[in-house]
Amino acid sequence: MMRLSNILKVLLCLCLAMSGCFMREGRGIWVVRYQLNSPIVLDQIVDDTRQGRFNLLFVQVHGRGDAYYHSRVVPRSEALVETPPEYDPLGYVLQQGHAAGVQIHAWLNVFYVWPYPPPYPLSPQHVVNSHPEWLIVDDDGRNLTQYNQAERVRESSEGLYLDPANPLVRKYFLQVCREVIQRYDVDGIHLDFIRYPGSRWGFNQEPLEAFIKRWGVDPRLLSVWVQSPIPERFIERKLPLHLRWHYYYYSLWAEQKSSYVTELIKDLHHEVKSIRSQALLSAAVFPDPQVAYYSKGQDWPTWIAQGYVDLIVPMAYHGDQHRVLAQMAEAKRRAQGRVVFAGLGAWIKDPIQIQQEVEGLKEIGVNGFSYFSYQGMKECDAGYIKQVKGYLHRSRASLPQVISRQPGQGNPSSSILEADGALLLWRSLKKQFFSLDAYQALLGRLGMTEDALQEQLREETAAFERMTKEIYARAMPSLDQKVLLPRSVEVQSIFRYCHPKDGPQTREEASIAIQEAYQRLQMGDAFAQVAAKYSQRSATPERFYLQDGWNLAEIVSSLREGETTPVIEVPNGYLIYKVLKFYQPEERVYGELPLWLKRVAFQERFARMVKEQE
View (cartoon, rainbow, N blue to C red):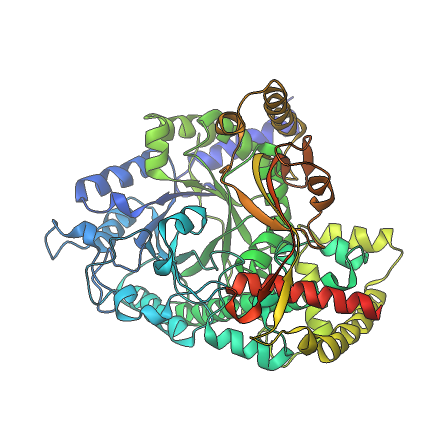
């Protein structure tokens, strides 16, 4: 007699064999704009997608503030200059894709509008040329076009961004989105680069003045040592009081910046659904929620919770399987039952690695997968798509059912400049954890309820705001006043990265590599030569001021010039410093200092005054 399990397997196979009865699984590919200037190439992409049993393409039609479609809002891409004027890449891929049963989502880059260095866009209509005042600026008040070559090498941002805080920028992008959704029968709008380039960016006049008016503090003066999330140390009071003050205001600044991005997401959701209710709104996001929020202003867990997006795609490209599974498991928990696709780095991982990741992700209930990118897979292995089909797509699959729901009433960030500081601090601290489980575990270790934490934060917020009234203004030097810049050090480094969620084998490999580098240094090999072989970041000299906040200041200060530290384990890997030169404290006239040194001078005075009152 046939066992019940075997009967179920037979029934499942019969079901899958019947037309239209497929498993539900998202199988997407990102198609970068470089592939869109030829109908022949688009035909091949659609055919490969169909043959490989994929069911969705994210097609990049608005990549650098330009259009791979017929637009009245943005200029036609310079890459299409040799194509006939009537050629419409988006219209063509929609026609071919829908005929093949493949969904086509228009992939739109939001705030990132042009790569750097020059040449700049040729069209006067391009937003970089027509509205240069919309470009985002750094904490020194400069946009990227004002950087010299040496500064650009050290800067990690991809290129020129628009300012998310500018209402005109948000209105402009709503026009971009509206035109696409009105004129084309796309199955969805897919958002990318809907974020800040990093912590140092976003100090444009309007958000800066709004923050100063509300809180009485200039965020440009806040310590660089609070630009990475360390909520555990803050809650456990393991930071000096003056640094906790910095952390409080930086958390408020992170909330304000993220609120501008969230406001655009909310408006885009309304725009898309009011024009075509069945179209999906999705976003590619940084996979670590605390980094996305605190460093990039990309508060995607709130977007999910409030119903502003239908589908989230964390870009879990890098790292080993342990890291990818941890990132996507947290995304599933944050999604609260909503659809989540895993964005996979197929251009840097072979089909076997991708197979292992997908099989592990299916076990935790991930709804689908998107592979970056079509061309990346082709360049990695000509038979990549065929291998993925053989390993993972043995039968066809329909897209998961996505049920759009009404967004939550009211945007929790809309009244950010009127909200209570303690409430904003608590909200921000929760977002600074990789997982909500880690937040709850910390409260458990401290024997503290959430209500007790909020009461503690209310008391501390009152203390921070008293410090602002009583000390902040006094700590601000006048322009003609002499100030003391503290002792500083110039160092080179060798660094091996490890994500906190990487598995033991990956961490061991990084540890072995850094130990080999250290042994080479001990044998007398030149630091630059060793760094070139082992370091994963530039060994360009860096200068640090020896102030409270830098955890490694004591180790570095104990060395002499020319000496190297032992291997130091840090939360994101391993490093070795070589001390090049110590600089003794010096007096300077405050008004003659560049802004970054004014920040150092202010922080030194503020810390001293706080300690005097403790």
